[in-house]
Image (cartoon, rainbow, N blue to C red):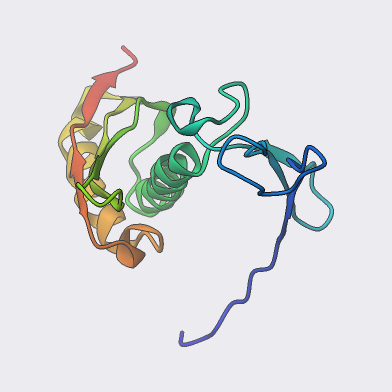
Length: 157
């Protein structure tokens, strides 16, 4: 199936304190992400970069986008392969490095999914399907850094 999908959203800066970007300290890093027919997401830069630590930041959204895309593909593949998953949780983390000029990029994201399978006989295939999910994940295929996987599989019995 060859097809294009288009996605749209609106990002609105809400951090003008009356002086705009007069200087580095004169504005907030707050913004709102609006996507049609969905609740708004309040964002800011990371607190380390003068942001509001109570709001979502782009770096967190990136790693959770990777983790959720992986999970959705993984569950899809498990359903096709008769691997019955009864629980899934991922403690995802990422490493961003900033160079001497202030430019930053992610060097890696680490997925740590813990899945529960219905039967012990499904564990081996359940672990193996993480690699296939990575190969199909749209977000993983769109980034230029390493995505590591440290899956744990437990059986319900």
